[in-house]
Length: 230
Image (cartoon, rainbow, N blue to C red; front, side):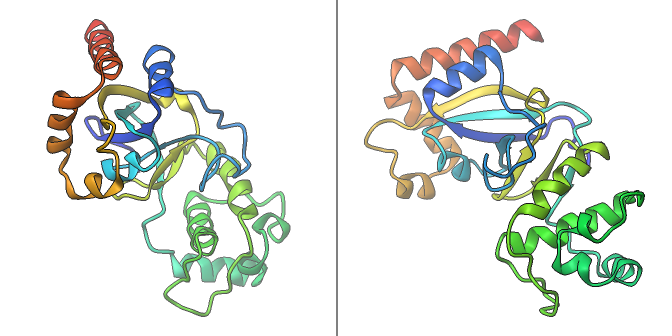
């Protein structure tokens, strides 16, 4: 799916990192195809759910993706018909082994085939069984790591769950722009129980009342920088 203009996400981080992001932008390399950088590998992680973002840092940023950013939605069910077709063509090894060990190098996957493989191997990597119950699980993340590079060649800029708390990873950091420093959780209020039970508006108001001066100054600086670009 192409992320539409006006669709915003959240990113949680430290105040120090937030300052660097506001001044210099996000930093991550989509050329690193290992998965050591996070659950879905190296990249910029954003989510539609502000509470999830705040789990990773007390400073909340609202971000937008560059228009035309293409994300593979992992929330779409695995295409069983397409997987059956791949099994008939290459054998059950495409389910039990890393796909590149089974599929010939001269085979150019279609986008539908690639999407099916990524979605299939994502589920066991996240320890979730397919509804079918009969498909075996891949033992680790290696297939996802290799398939990331294929996604880049097919014009994808990231993958994940664009519409829910699980979030997405964007491979190329320059496609993610900071719109706003929303808040920094005040000391004494950053327990997850407070975050879980509060709306975003309530947390904004808490930040206005009790937020620290450094975070408020950064929020002002972000607004000025953004106004200067519009």
